[in-house]
Length: 119
Image (cartoon, rainbow, N blue to C red; front, side, top):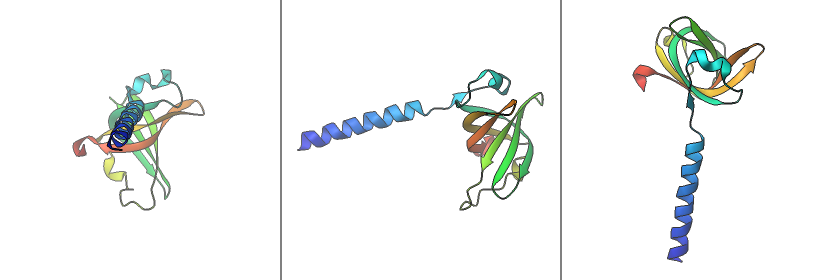
């Protein structure tokens, strides 16, 4: 019985390791986003250039050197107190999310957005 429990625990740990390895975010520079495939899980960083919010979503524009920029869509969690993004303006942020095509431009659907100073 102890051997069976040990084998199941090892299989569980191995499965967890495989899942964690496959859910990594691929680091991408903003200028390289156009060449990435839709649905790719990416990680970008840059300065928050603009924020537009309503009750349900925030559109955060992230840029590198004010030349390259991308829109990041953040769906707000109504149960969370951390739904205000105006304070992010002008600060450095790291975004993890999924790359999507929206009309003729790329955008990121954010899984997380963190300020660099807060990481």
